[in-house]
Length: 176
Image (cartoon, rainbow, N blue to C red; front, side):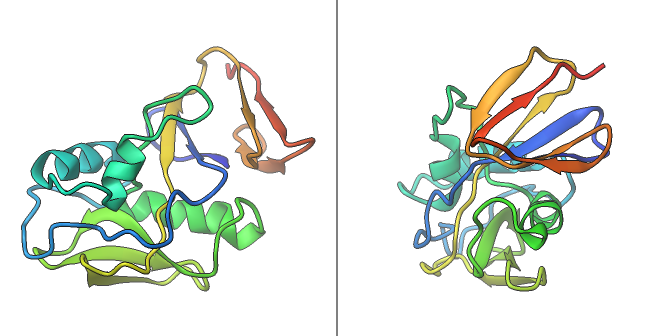
């Protein structure tokens, strides 16, 4: 789904399906320096995680290595980006989210990372070694960039904040 935050004109879009329902956050017991929770920090968080945690198959690496719809700039959302994904999409029936717990890229400490429960939107933290948490990638782009087409995604039209999803083909116009 595409949605817009107060973040310097960026629009955010989630992939149309979970990337995993079983991979750990990774590097239990290792402090990843400098992950943040605010909107706009998920991309940097993801970069820090994959640099400092070399384990294959972890949640952030799955997002970082994802190539989908021709884009390779996907990342694991920060706590607040994930919260917006729940509020704007999942809570309104968009995005094919599971009623389960999703990883954010926000670390709590060396042993735990922040999660959001998509049953109710509550945030918590779980051991990074847990293997029954879901992963959903996100990307962002500056509004005003050339029109693009995504398939199978619901999104929020920024100007009116109304939901649009039809024919499994989403066409965002050029935003002025």
